Each structure stands twice: as C-alpha cells, then as structure tokens.
Amino acid sequence: MTRPPSSAPFARTVVCPCCGGDSVYSPANAYRPFCSERCKQVDLGAWASEDFRMPAEAPPAEAQYGDPRLQH
Image (cartoon, rainbow, N blue to C red; front, side, top):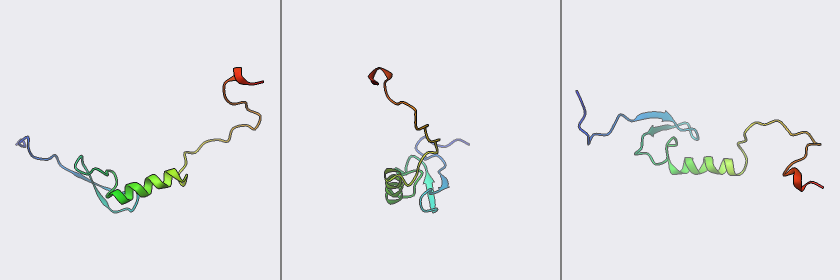
C-alpha cells in the first residue's frame, strides 16, 4: 500500500535536549530537535554564555600563535 503524495511522512518523537519533554522530529517542527522556541533559545543562550564547551587540551604556554611572519 502506498501513501498519496499529499500525506505527511511518519513523524518520529524524540526527547527534547533542553527540557526532556517529547518533541516531534519532522520538517513541520521548525524548532527540531527542540520542542519549542523557548527550548531552542535556552540552548542557544547556554552556548553563547559558554555554559557548554567543546573539550580541548590547553595549549603549551610557550607556543606561538598567529602568522609566524608577523612575529618579531
């Protein structure tokens, strides 16, 4: 059995990464994977205020940065 072209594909429900509630993961949800605009904005704010960070090793203190041609 095939679906008519006008019917929407099966929408999957996922856990909202912000609040833990249910979120519909489909093109119809403009905030996916979040459940709402609020959750999307809370997550963006956490990244902007550096509450979330990518793990990285600290660079050596004596390392030179930038273009070596500009070093004196």
